[in-house]
Length: 361
Ligand SMILES: Nc1ncnc2c1ncn2[C@@H]1O[C@H](COP(=O)(O)OP(=O)(O)OP(=O)(O)O)[C@@H](O)[C@H]1O
Ligand SMILES: [Mg+2]
Image: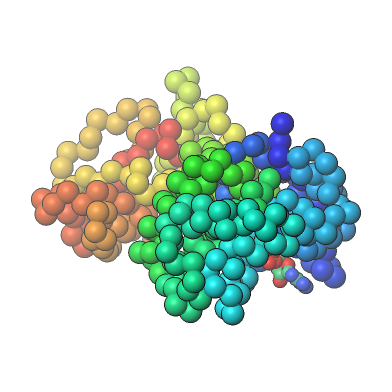
């Protein structure tokens, strides 16, 4: 049975539908990432679940019960809000205990529970400190402890790592994942960072302009994006534009780009006819020296000739920009395996990619 069930939730501010007919359910113990650009309605959705905002339409069920009439503190929801820092005048222990007091937990039980929560987020011994005596990462862990302390039916985390610098963010991301798994918390974690969403979530919900653009496992979202928005928003992508030319008996469909380049894709996926957008992920593109003999080209293989425009070695990866005839540019991401494999600007290359790696929208 699902712990949370949203049905057709809509919330308008004047003409703007901040949340536009969202339906969503989560099973017990699952972590759902809510991913989308700024302003797409993520925070509004969480605030509706928590009871701070009443939807114009739709219902919120928690544990099978409609909670529409319940105040925030009457809902068994653990919160970590984007703009909702710790209480500066309270100690760490008082911050963690706050939600419990509010919900009428037996006073005698509170210290034990606070100790458990601080052990969980590895802050044992810091009970008496105040927020300003903690690092940003430690403050976020206190906020997480506070959200989990009330043993909530559902945990809502709104950009839990956004205030942290890149390195700390990465460390705390893994820690957060372990903690959520360890307590088996049913969780919605909101982020506009795709890597964070794909790492943390058992499933990812991609939102766009108040609507759900796609829900799926991280792999599904990345490898089989349902539409152009998801393909563009999650991961890097190259785009060409063209129309269908024909289909061969071996299940390969040919397109011709506006510049006259031939692109092959596998039949059997949804794909249009005229004026389609053609997408290739940069890591699926192989580069070979253009001076070498043309590789044997099977029906599954795409080959585009071009000239290297830019080479950027970025640690483990090398980002190579190739200019194709007609001024289109293609980004290829290759593993950085040493000097010998590196191409140089001005070099003629062939970009190779499989028909099965081509997405049509
Ligand atoms: N109280 C309000 N009054 C008017 N408009 C609002 C109000 N709250 C939110 N909005 C608008 O609703 C839309 C959704 O806002 P929301 O805060 O849910 O976005 P978000 O996805 O959380 O974005 P971010 O990633 O920037 O936090 C935005 O266009 C925002 O300007
Ligand atoms: Mg927000």
